[in-house]
Length: 305
Image: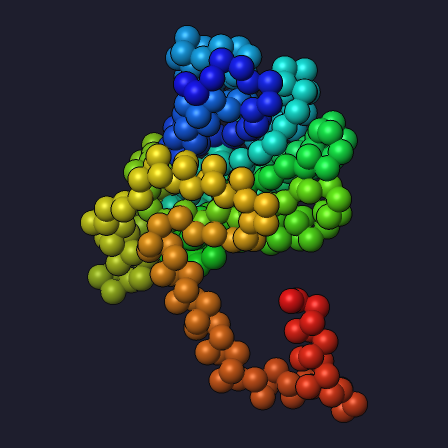
């Protein structure tokens, strides 16, 4: 541990910190001498931290991200314990695998509650804390853990991707709403494959729907590919990358973790541009008669510089 004095160390608020990337990040934060609010639905699994790190450096907090009252309590406890908050990481989540016809709607809705509405409510509390409780201008960072599946959807993961797509859209809008003087910025983190419990204990799986159970079915082929794939990521390196991202004065809106995530995002972005150019005449054909296409392009180019 870097130091026994934590007065000026950053404070992190991490959801889903009992395993996977959340646990790796929590450990990295504490080992570097920074402070953390470690949250989990069952905080007793975080008990070993109580023995290793002093209370001045850590706070263990029960949190189910679908429980709004618990979210408010967790932020109140953070204010009381640390008095400041620098980085919020919305990491809690799980997978839901199955064809869209195979998954009951109540399970699909539960997936969206965890992946989307949980981070929404936490982000809203983070904004208020970073703006109104932190010293003026200190601001903070909100790292919303999406997935490469939040940029590229795949068969059998429709509801998972739907939740992550929604989170990405929300994060993009949230970052644009922040006044520059607040210094509050959001980042979408898109991990690829990492050796976590996501595909095991943190995955709710439904058997192949009878209508899709054939050798040439995309969902059957995708399931087989998943069974034979190996995660190339390193959890600790992901944690180190997230700490670096949180330290950037002007972080990117999106960043991928892992070479496969980077390549998949590049392939989709390139295909999007290719389709834009190929079918541009259809897009422009719906303009009003008085519209100057070149002027519209110029105006928008200036706005998005």
